[in-house]
Image (tube, rainbow, N blue to C red; front, side):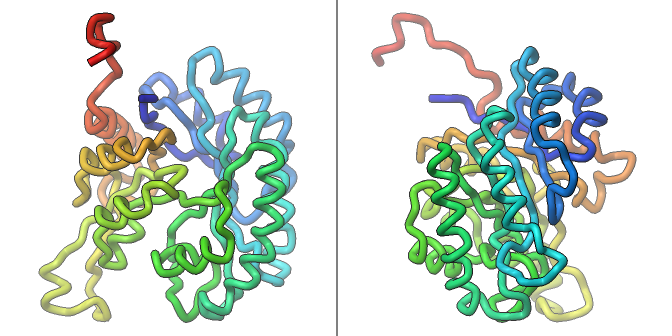
Length: 299
């Protein structure tokens, strides 16, 4: 079974300034991210610089991500679809076959109201991706939205996933999943993972801590915060179980740490937290891969 690699997210505009400083800590993949648009990024030049640097070290690019709203008609997102297309068209230059991001949504409308537009936009994008051997995965962050309204993403709830994949039952459409975004909705990620593992193409390494005492005393609508996004190793999830479930479902993707959210391990402690998460997740997968002796291969 192919080893599940552990990496981290890096913003495209910081990639070549940050990656050379952190590769020696043992990151095995990097997920390259864009916010709202790819803008004036020279994609081909970025791909060349990254692959020239990473390939000799045996480090790979796990995915390209664009966090924008391709379902909106707002001028703020006017080149959202074009950004998706550009990353799909150039993914192979980075050595990856995965492009991820938000689905988008019709702003301030319900998830139900966004499904037809989702089907139109990603029906075309999924065909474009399939023609190039590329898969598309949807990140599961609420971005402050709910079922009735929001500005960014409909792919944050399993009921929405049912609607999405019924509308577009394409094999190259799946999820970029993390337990955190489900936990802060008070959804148990483990039974969800067991059900949806076959549709998960990439995992974001982000956890959560839930303070059930606050929930019991104040509920979820009060002034007290009841949930915190955490770096893996500091939250409530059992990542050994998560990785075991992924492996039992033949998962071959990576787990890429999504940093800059932990309320404790941030600022000057950001890299400390991320390297702890890297080593913790490697232990949760069983440590380093060790080849069986020849005599064991048929057992």
